[in-house]
Image (cartoon, rainbow, N blue to C red; front, side):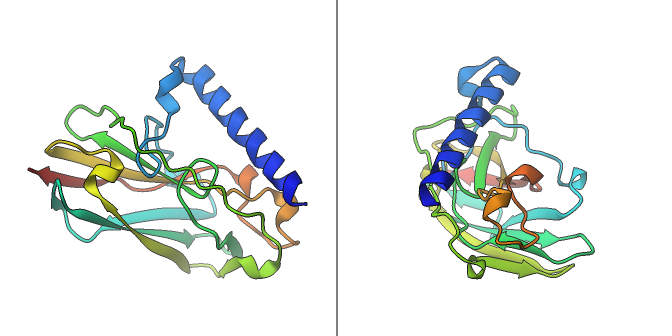
Length: 195
């Protein structure tokens, strides 16, 4: 079962990258940077009927040597219970991607840091968190500014995309937000970085 899940994830990543390259016409346009990140147009969470993703930072101004604390919340906006896979991590093969743009030019921040955690396949119902209607589930991540590929002063936009790594056949009969339900983009948070 584990190898079938890993095979499914590998095929999903390959198909996603191929589609993005074909759609944008640029091979490097969909290469995530930082703890995610790249040049994907973040999806409008209002298009999605079941969940929204909201992000916030503890402050709006940072120095190049500072750490950024990013809070990420998934909220169930549907009228039914929903389950989210507990193994939240960063990267296209996992749950979240972080996209960083220069706020002045709108261009993507491209760099050397790449996160792509490969979560273990779910082995029981206990690996899912129940979200009743109106409830949220989230976490905080801390990174050095340079870990998200910001290497010079300026204004930047941070956006997160949630994409479940769990295909429906691994949901144990639960109403899980799974891979075929699509990606959900967050709000954008603007930060100012000084030397």
